[in-house]
Length: 261
Ligand code: 48H
Image (cartoon, rainbow, N blue to C red; front, side, top):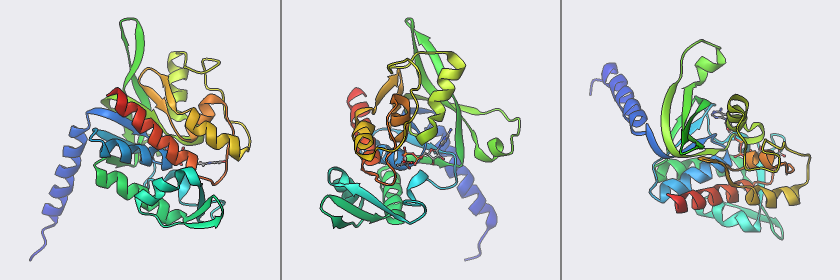
C-alpha cells in the first residue's frame, strides 16, 4: 500500500469536525478531565447520555497521574474500591481499608472506560465562559464557551466557539474555574450558604472525603459541582492523595443528572 498523506489528513479532519458537530447539543458537558470528571463521563456515557468532556491540557487525568508528591501511587478507601475495580485497575490492600493503586494505571483505566463508553473527549480545549439564559424569570446555564488551549496560552485575541448542554458539571478541581467565571461575570447567587464560592480549607482527609460526596450537587440551575471543586465551592477541607471521594463524587453526579434527564 502506498500511503497518501492527504488521506491521513482528511480522515482526521473529517472525524474531528463530525465529532464536534455532534456535540453542539449535549445532554451533559463536563469541564475538566481529572478523576471526578472522567468517572462522571464514564458513568453518563454508559447510561446512554450524550456527554462530552473538555480538558485544557493535552492529557486528561488532572492531578491523579502523580499520586502524592509525584510518588505515583494513590490510595482509595473501601467505599470506592469497587469503582476502580470495575474500571479494571488492580489494587492491593496496604492496611485494612486502605487500597493502593498505581496512579498511572488508575488514570489510564478511567480514561479508557470513559472513551470506551462513548464519552466524547476534547483535550487541549479550555472552557472560558458559559452560556446564560433567563427563562420564566430564572437564570440557567445552557452551554459552554470553548477555545483552543494554545490560543488561550498564547493569549491570542481569537473568539471562542459555543455549544449547548442540558447540564454542565464543574470538575475543574481546586480552582473552580468555570463557577468563578459565572459568579464574577454575572453576579448570580449560588446554592451555597453565602451565595458565593466558600473557598477550600486546609487538610482534614476524613471529613473532606465525606464532604466531597455530600457537596456534589446542583449549585446553580444547570451547573453541578463534583470532585475537588465541590469542596472548594462549599468550603470544605483538602484530603491529599486519597482519591475515593473523587471517584464517588463522579458516580454520584452522574446518577443524579441521569435521574433528571
Ligand atoms: C478545561 C480545565 C479548566 C477549564 C481546569 O484537579 P483535577 O484532578 O480535579 P478532580 O476534582 O477530579 O480531582 C482532584 C484531585 O486531582 C486533587 O487535586 C486532589 C485529590 N487533591 C487533594 C489535595 O489535598 O490537594 O482535574 C481538574 C482538571 C485539570 O486537568 C485541569 O487542567 C482542568 O480540570 N481544567 N479544563 N477548561 N477552564 N480548568
